[in-house]
Image 1: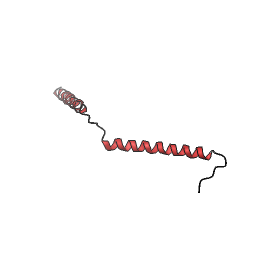
Image 2: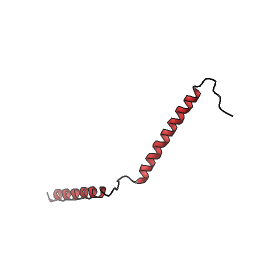
Image 3: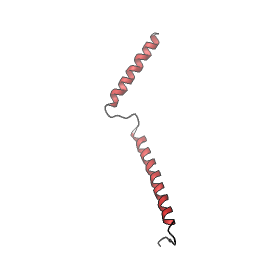
Image 4: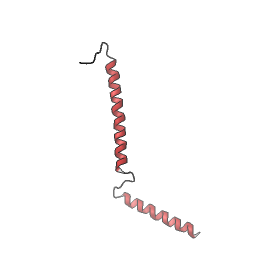
Length: 67
């Protein structure tokens, strides 16, 4: 039973520390991971926009690419 009491106190103390640290604006996710996610999403959005633009231009009858 003392082991359970020790684990309970340790977990409760650690959770309280994490809650206090969260008030400072610190994030558990590193900034590099957030930036990578933003770049990944931006790449996908840009690719989709380029694909839609090409499809739209190819749908124009008698379309030729400028030289």
